[in-house]
Length: 190
Image (cartoon, rainbow, N blue to C red):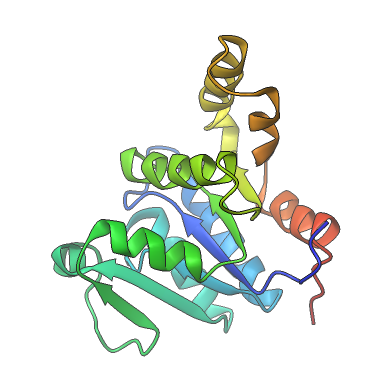
């Protein structure tokens, strides 16, 4: 049980929409829910794919945002420097650090190699005792089921302690993500 309520949530997700329209729909639902709960969205600053959907929905619902993007992706994923809450970093590593350090919890939505990189970095940091922030998987239509099975296999094969699986909380819907944040983390909302 966390002592401080969650104020900012870092979202890792795809810069592509994926093939299942449910991914974009769930991203928009989560963005809206975060805004309605008074939580600031910390994200990769892209206005494309699932990343763009979560941000657009949060923005439309009046939510606060902090976008973080490396210079080399600026023209590719984000198209405007007009946002006062946009941080442009020099490297991807710096982007990940800034995003994580400015959030109280992490939610991973469906995504590709970049999302996996971000997710496993924070899980590794948790395993090493560098943080205790909750890490949640938005498991839309079972997208993350193979990853959950892989983590079980890693534990079974002796490459991680059994408590490693507890560092990750799968939730099937955005409503379940929000319920987890509210109940487990004593989140108070307006």
